[in-house]
Amino acid sequence: MNEIHLPHQHGEGEETAIIQAQLGRIDQFQTVTEVFRQLGDTTRLRVFWLLCHCEECVVNISALLEMSSPAVSHHLRPLKSSGLIVSRRDGKEVYYKAADTPQSRLLHQMIEQVMEITCPEWMGDHHG
Image 1 (spheres, rainbow, N blue to C red):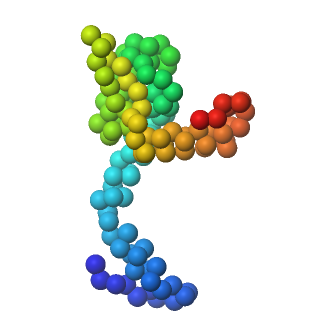
Image 2: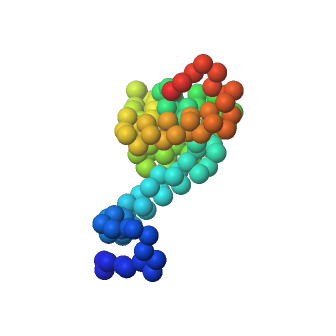
Image 3: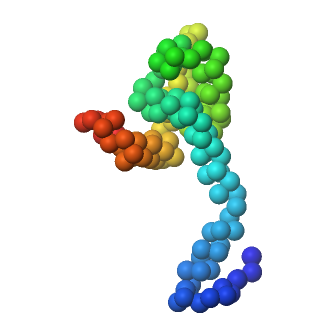
């Protein structure tokens, strides 16, 4: 990528080249976009938030969200393929939970912080 000389100089120096280099890493921005796209659906966000707090099977997730099992499965698939949740099989039952990754933890914290800021009474004494 060629160095761009900004039309207006405001004292930027070396940081402009660093910022420009980061902006050129489109693949990284695409990865972030894909993660946020998974949480761009209210139901999927609710499923992810639930699985940040407990490990559950599809039937119980369905009951908690008052949805059909096929509808829940529809939301679990992209969350799993994006790496935000993981599953384990125990006999015939499959259990899901949030992945133990920096991305999942950060998204969980972000969701709770946004909810606390926009709806402070929702959390009561619960933090995290």
